Image (spheres, rainbow, N blue to C red):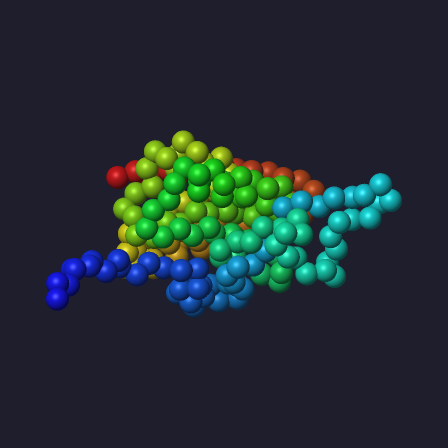
Length: 183
């Protein structure tokens, strides 16, 4: 009997794997997979708000689900969309639009795009990104701790600074930057 030699695809990270790997690095924060965030709040002609704090936020009820969400005291700080192996222009356009909608409700939210199993993000990402605050290619398991974790920690700090700015009557920004690293 002839057996076909099939190459086994290397196992790539799932949101749950990433949650388990990330959780120990973010003590004091809630790290959850599949958490929904509001993308819209409406006020009807009677003045009733479409969503209140007593109702659970659910996908399909003015909410999109995120792959990974880091929050504190129910305040979302960092949302991350995860892809494994590859991504398309459509992925970037769709998730970037989703990020934009979420950030209209949560202006301090930092939103990221993480692709596991690739060396670089490339032109496709740069061309189609409109709302991601950060993105990273994570080629292998060894890259999670030295590359991804510090990036996410810096985004948490940025989100917390934005929250403090929004709470303040007087906003004084010394520096605002968007950094792009290439090979």
